[in-house]
Length: 371
Image (cartoon, rainbow, N blue to C red; front, side):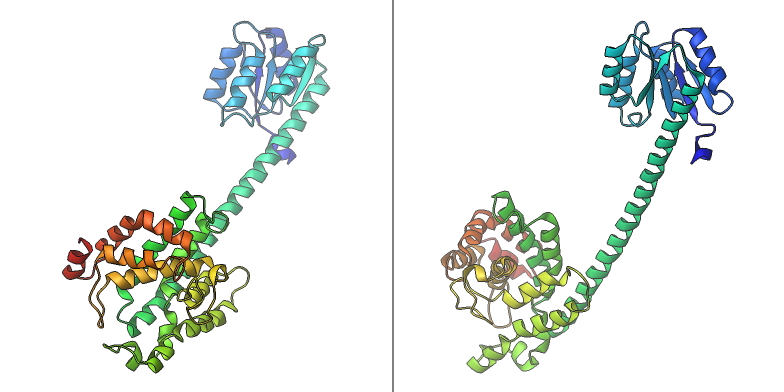
């Protein structure tokens, strides 16, 4: 660290030429020196050549040392420069004010050369040590950000691959995935804007929820084609088998989750896959959970999933007008859906319609949505 201080740039500011001469003679063999005879000259010198440390006289005409210090400490690019005040022995109040403004030390006139040299070396060493640590921290932060981006990309690819696999089995999952992601984000952020579930719905958690949404029906991979692709109404036995997709989804994501250390991005995927068909009154499946026993993620997904199922054309049904879908969700308040989530949806349902129109799969859906 001592080698780092050699050739450091030292700005000496004093309106007395003799004082500058003494300091130049004391420090010139080791450091690169810049001299200024007044406050404005000092500020101009800083702007031209950024010093590593400043020896600053307090009592100067026009702009005094205290004002120079205050100006430099208010600037982001100069606040870290250590300032040592040059003071007369009787200027005790000035010394105190200098420390309050951010000075690191003071040297009393007349100067003791060895004291000046020792104080300058000490504060330069401290500055370069701090700068080194800041550089190391910036490097580490950059590496962490790069690693985080890499992990996020891996998570995204994993989800897209799994969702694409599900799409090959279920002809309903194409734009349904994109729409439900948008619905989730809109509803979650609307809840936060109304002061609801703010602790759970942080921006990070909302983004993870949106990212996880494509896996909500991943369990349909385990449902036989004869049931999954059946164009007509399912029998009771077939529907009982279809309902198992929530269990299949939870089990498959749980197995994957076990191989990931720490808090996994698959947590929300598991929750929504397992619970988005549960109902507020306990009549849903697969576990007949009731009220807040249902994870918030599953309750949000329930509204998004049902709305999209209602307004979209399926092999077994025609698309429904937006107004009718809204009415059905309203009627499900307290029975199928969380009341507070339902109230929020009813305030922002037009945003759902806008998303649906943007991703409508055919002209028929667009026409009906506009009704």
